[in-house]
Image (cartoon, rainbow, N blue to C red; front, side, top):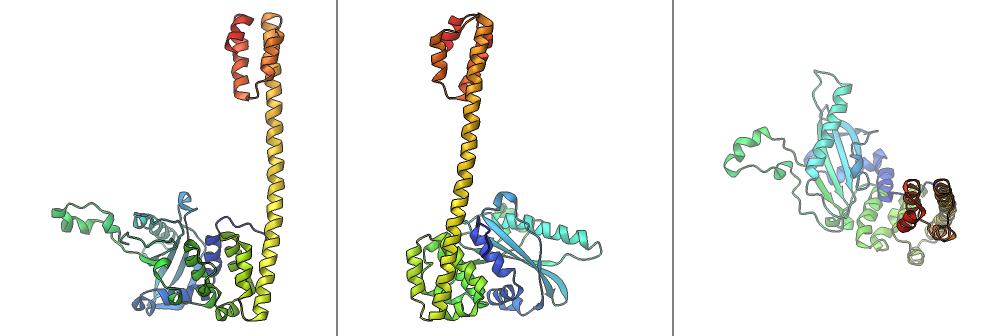
Length: 338
């Protein structure tokens, strides 16, 4: 079992599934307009090893870029997976910046006179509510009504293909068995349907590899920690071999999660202990420095001031008092500031 903790489980599930060319090919063939799908040379589909997402959006989205031939010419399919809970009305603007980066990388590798390849941007949205945003860049432009037709030829214009999981019924999500189950899982999670029948269709579960089954179970456990509900759902699997295999993987993942939690707890406890130790040492050193400064500047330090300093635990406050001790004209003036 892989031990890598899941920080963005939807990213990992989507990328692990659709980095596989067979899964990606079947997904695109089922969810692109038929006129486009028929024109692509699907045997030429290749995954490109790059990401074009801005760092500030890395927690909200992930991407996959595929190259392929379109009637003998170079082309790209750019799949952006949007897994934030709400839509971005300016998605087209973000996509424009990603498209430019793809072209910039292409031009670096293909000097003039090579022409820029066609790019088909596809947004796969996971949110629980349908989007209201129109998927066209020109809808973001504020063009005066009387000048719109005159200005439009000078403005960038494109449309992205928006696939909203919330709008697509489970049975209409197409592709390979692994791809279908991944899409169903990503659709089910935001709307709390991870234990619905569509996600546990046995004909699909039979058809996927053990590693793919593990990824799906890992995602379910990460998204819904109700282990009793998961076990109850697994017990409904009619095929005993499949039920046993699924239950075994789920138990292994639970044990892995416990061990990871214990490890993280120990590490956090150790860090907390170090932090507390450093803070405590800093407080003692600052108290000593304040007392020593008063003794050097004024010859002595009354017991009342020592007792008052013992009650102060805030390092910043003690730093302030150290500065006062160095600048005070008398013990009395320091005591007033204390």
